[in-house]
Length: 213
Image (cartoon, rainbow, N blue to C red; front, side, top):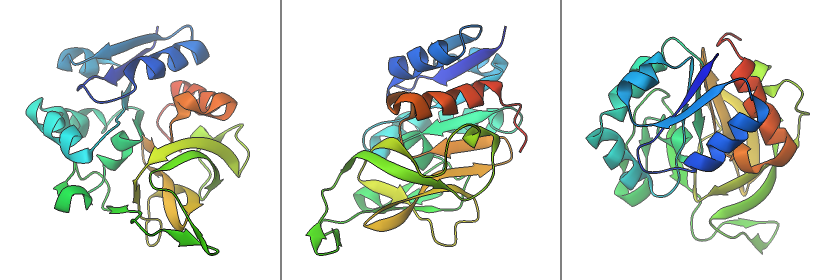
């Protein structure tokens, strides 16, 4: 039986993510855990995240999750979700600047308090459904049409321009990286566990993925 470990560092939609993975892969053992040995032994690992990146990174560093993520993301399928994706970047400008885990070189930017498009002021945080366009072919996009809508909740975003690791693009006032990928790591700004059929398909693809593109 395959095992998926969802890292519990106190910040994330842990149980909704667990239920979604269990739904799409009933033959998979899904653990919500902070036990480093269980995470090391898992076939696949998910890093979720919600809330302020400063709080998330404080807990990640206090618990040693940053080093654990660097370790387990080297050799098995690894999925970051929402702030879990932002935590994989080099730095976020939130709260004056927060250093992140640094698996990807991208910066995380604030949408701003005056985000305007076509003369209309856009609400921040960005909350709701938005189209995601594939920028690379990837096993996690299998069965998901280009331009499919996913559910977002965020005030900060990873840059899309000059982002060599971008795997999916979205637009909300600015172009943003909806997904990034490198080797056996895939991470998404949206919440697949809240994104109906398309999100469940992505999670199913993740549980089937062997970590190669």
